[in-house]
Length: 146
Image (cartoon, rainbow, N blue to C red):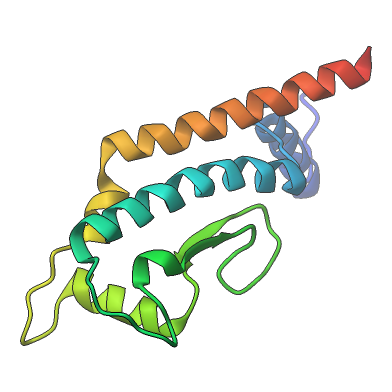
């Protein structure tokens, strides 16, 4: 007769199987990898913003929206969990970008941010930067083992 495992043992076995079949990357590595992708996306968002919405208006307080793009190596709320976030440095620019992207009842949106996010060429650039950073980190780990 086969031995019956209790639920805790079955869940433990399942967790081991999942960990063995997936990449178990620590948060510090995740942060480095997503930072590389965020840097690429930041440059692309800045270029798209300059191309579509750059004006000659000289705002002494906030500057231009394209100059106010940044990334942070954390979640949107500042939690260090391996994610990186790209966006506008101040609320004023963020709200303007949202109105330009989504539109308002008096102005149709042009979806410049949405189109950038969904652009396969941009996605490939971001993924390539992340892959390159991952390979670099793997190389460092192998050097440490020698």
